[in-house]
Amino acid sequence: KGSGQFHHDGQYVGSFVIPEGVISELSISDIVVKVSFSPDKWSALSLTSEYYRGKLALTVEGHTHVKIPGLNYQFDAKFQDIEVNVNDPSLDDTHLCACPGWKKPVSIAAS
Image (cartoon, rainbow, N blue to C red):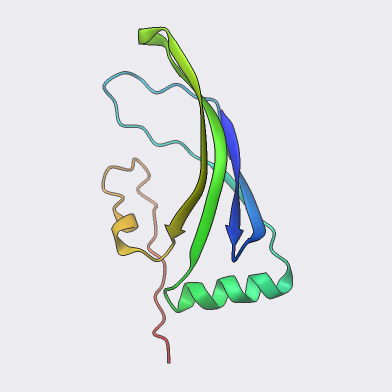
């Protein structure tokens, strides 16, 4: 279980919640993270413009609590200043996802 925030150009633009869940041993699992974006109108225009130009980057920070029952181990994890290039094609790999409905974002050529 955890939570965090998204920033763009140093401004808060959204948050996310990592739900409590159990991942079975020796498995690959998807965890659905609830995300809320609430930029002001000028930030929203900038986010949209950068996304369609293929240049949108967000900074992520947050925390989570991890339990590993098989090892009787738990810890708190904190992460900050993680740069995410939203348009990075290497992030498009969803072949292990159990969600057949994943849709690829539409690319619009910049003029």
